[in-house]
Length: 242
Length: 292
Image (cartoon, rainbow over all chains, first blue to last red; front, side):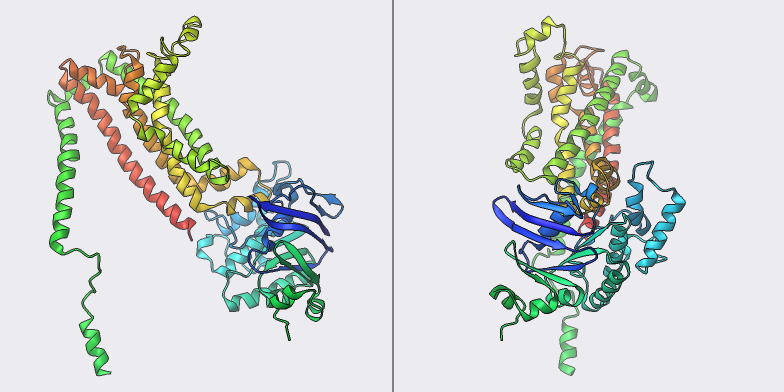
């Protein structure tokens, strides 16, 4: 599904996190929101998810649907949190099955169907056999993949990832980058991820949106941005000054 | 090489920390604590039970057959059964709003919750007399409508709610503060509504802290003397709770009976202590897991 964000501003008690941001994202694109910490990139992701609401005037649309006023639980965008936010008291199975358990009774699949769906999702993230583990019994990379499977359980049309590799060590990080790219190729889900690491953004994303001080500085393919940095900030941030 | 091994040998004794005490000081401190606990806590507890059984087990049991004592026990249970659930709901709501939302005056509210712990319980009772008593603000109106609050059960419940309302909220606020709201946000993005988030995500995370608060709240509700004494009016068989009944029995020289009822309250305290320790231990574990 395509996403259109226009004129989104967001202030937290006077200090502005986003200032008149507009972006268009095509169906199936893999987008990186790149910027230094405090730039507003995570706020933008949360506005898209419906975890924050833009100040007056801003709109967020999924396809033709204006979802600006819709709360996260009706917006149904898959969201993977920076530190995964797995339910600590639930097994891997129950974490992933959660989205089915909270469906209204008439929409809820029977237990056997839930088991099949969870099994499929676990297989997709290569964690078959880990159903009964608790999140504390998993490595960082495994937790990350459980969070992925959990977000995919709602069959989202949009996948939002907040610093998906931030908390992992370098080697696992590389593997997961490759995995995310392959995964995206396979299912072509509109995906937006937030990162402060330019290598990560340029290696994985189709298009990079560079943010600083709550304003979009430049957006384009990795090549475009590298060849024609729009301004001094982009040049500095990407270390492109000759 | 040889040099380093001698250094190692010299360092093999456990290093003295700056805060480490000598064994003598440690012994004295532990000793003082034990003597103090024994003298001021354990000994009185033993005396309560000893006095309760001073005229034998038969007399002990007979003490509870007295209709007024009977009534007092029932009233205590009734008051706790009303006050504890009320303050559980209040404590949950307060902890939820104070940890989930940032607003002006928030820290003042957190402090205000502790108010009943600072003021004398007698004042807590007196406030209700001033509002609902015969000479109070609402006194004439209440009399016209034939509603009795002071010197009746509603007043006792109100006073008990007042003195016990900090316990649940205080137990929950630090716990919920530490746990943050990421899991709740995750549940929201997975399509859970407010009630489902509370029941499936928040409640399991806080249940031991909640139980800890409820236990303390209950202990205080059953044991409260001061505030209840002011609003009760000490009407035998009607508005006497267990602590008030104990005082009356004692003042009328029914020592064995007084101590028998007192032993029941003491027993409650012991059970509370045991449950509290267990809940505390589980709550701490939950807090540790939250910081993982």
